[in-house]
Image (cartoon, rainbow, N blue to C red; front, top):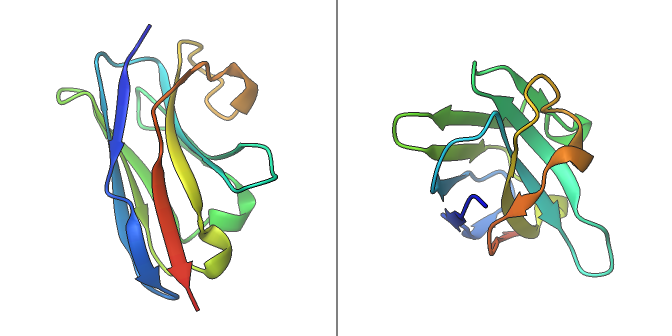
Length: 120
């Protein structure tokens, strides 16, 4: 199973930016970012195919950008205009099912997560 290690989380004020990175032991057809807050289920935030096609959850469209460097086996999430409601643990995830990177239920591997805290 693919191994995933996230980095780049931290604390920022509302309106600020953060960039998350995820190092993968090997690339998969789809890679994505999820987030989870206490008492809630983990939710898909963004997914990207090996061809660069990206999908976003509605609340982050226009603010977050997902990208990947296949040669470096690294996934990124650039988060701009952050809001307090973006506060969560962010997880990197992988899926072998190309063409369905927007289908959050198909992601099967997870990193350990990185905390993002946005203060108002």
